[in-house]
Structure formats: C-alpha cells, structure tokens
Amino acid sequence: MHESLNRSKRRDARALRKGGSDAYVAPVIAFEGAAYVINRYTHLKHETDETRRGNATFRAGVKARDGFRCHAERRSIAGIWFSCGKRTSPDPHHIYPRRNCGAAIFDPNVGIAVCRQCHDDLTNHKGDVRVPLVRVKVAYETIQLAAKLPPPGVKPVTIDGVCRMCGCTDELSCPDGCYWVESDLCSQCCDCDR
Image 1 (cartoon, rainbow, N blue to C red):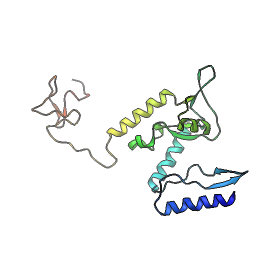
Image 2 (tube, rainbow, N blue to C red):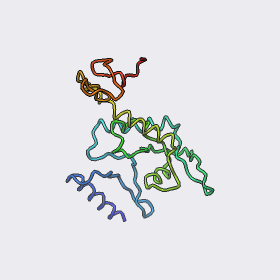
Image 3 (cartoon, helix red, strand yellow):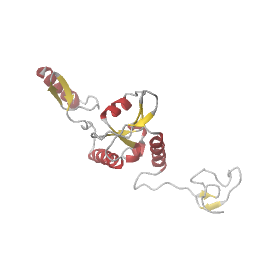
Image 4 (cartoon, rainbow, N blue to C red):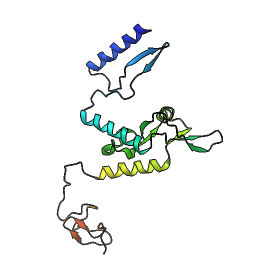
C-alpha cells in the first residue's frame, strides 16, 4: 500500500513539473489501508502570492462572520428545512462557482461557512442540503456590484456628450426626454432630486 502511494505522489509531482493539470495536489498518507488528504487547502499550480492572500482573507472572513459554525440548511425526513449548525471546523464554500464570482471572488459575502459533510454534499449537488436563500441573494448582489465597479486604481472612461449610464447623446436622447446634469450624466439616470 505504501509503495503505491509513493508512486502516486511521484506521478503527481511529475505532472506538475511538466505543466500538467491545475488540479489540487494534496499530500496523502496511508491510514488503516486507506488514503486520506492531510491538507484541504493546498495551493494551485498557478497561484500567486496575491491569490494566496486573497484565499486566506476569504476563509478567515467567512468563518469569522458565520461564528465558526455551519450555516447550510438540511432537509429532515419530514421534508422540513433546518440549519445544520455544527461547530466542527467549518469550511468556507463559494455560493456561486469561483469562475462566476469575478472581482468578488475573495469577498466573504460570496461565501458561507459549512461543515465538511455539508460542503461535500453542496459540491456534489445533493438534494438534501442547500444554501439559505438570503445568502444566495447577498452573494448575487455582491457579484453584480463588483462587476459594475472598475478595478482598483483604474478610472472609468467618460466621454462628454454621452451618458455614462444609459449611453444617450444629444442626437439620440432618452425616450421620455432628458437634459445634461453633468457632462456625462443625463437627467433620467441621475439619482438627484428633480
């Protein structure tokens, strides 16, 4: 058993050196004839210091906000949803897939603290566990807001005579008519009192 585990670790290390997959490669040990993953938070092949710090901030923020307990909802045999509430080392879980989080990927609002059993069930899309709908809404709004904001240090491009919100111009105004409040903002898009 130990020999096959060592062979497997060597094969994974070779694949990483050759530029193989981006999959997580975790250290493995033999314990009573079975292989167990030691570290659940190993590093991706292309992970930078910035993403490593972002992941650490995300994990710490989610756990602290959720009080270090599981917030997933489970369905009872009677079909009633209840909060899991386990306090055994919660894992942070992205409510939406990481690839869909965009600029909000490290924001704790797009995650939820869950126990390992709920994390595995959520990842495998089991029907008896779900994320509370309030958390889904908050995560969605956070992702939408992050998509609208420019990256830090980058100023949005504005063009005089073109509204930055709706794109209307002097020649093509809003359907209900509008006037310029600022050089790049029309009266229909302005939140100010009229």
